[in-house]
Length: 123
Length: 123
DNA sequence: AAACTGTATGGACTGTCTTAGTACACTTAG
DNA sequence: CTAAGTGTACTAAGACAGTCCATACAGTTT
Image 1 (cartoon, chains in turn brown, blue, purple, green):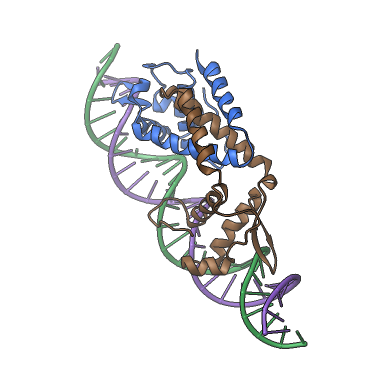
Image 2: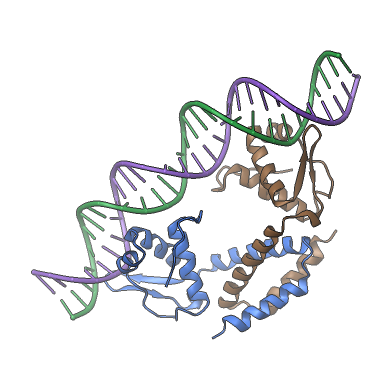
């Protein structure tokens, strides 16, 4: 489900967090789907449950999942994602696009990329 | 020219690096223009010259400026920027756009943002 | 020679990451 | 009801990386 890279500069909990978020965004994890328990995923990845919980905690703060004590953790609906997350994404989008334009990448080429993403991620 | 925020989680040298890069990308710093010396900028911001040099060093690795011992640091031409930087930007662009699409932002709206950036940054 | 420039090195300090252990409250399965 | 599984909270500890500063070195300009 996920793979860790200990040579990566990013801490483990960030790799788990970003990896799970990616699975949600790409549709690999459906809305409402149950995630592995913190202990199960920790056992699979051979790390401490606290590290997994930290990743879940961060994703819950972003609104990508919700946890119910005693039941488990589940993927939220995309309407429940925190608005601050979207604003943050828009800022990085603008900055990234501005720099790419400065480097000579055509705006049309960037728009074409977005169209490709729509086609590829939609499932 | 730049302002630091000590409450920001980002380290100082990153704030300087990103701030200068932004000045270059927006055209506030013209190509070939001479930057303040590491000591001058350190004195202005009331920090250690090494911290400034670290920011300059990073920007030089990206290709946004070049330094000549004894003379100073200057803004490179945008053609000299490292290709790895552009590839990195494209990756973050795709990931950011994909997540925004998942959150319900229309692709047309993102393209419109790019057009606005082209008009605003060009000077 | 003096004053400027970028550069290199070493070290103190701080914070972060991760693990480990323990404990609690809740839900489900038997 | 009991037991197992779930999320959650807290502390302690160590290891590690990062950040920043002080200092010294090397080059260029005046």
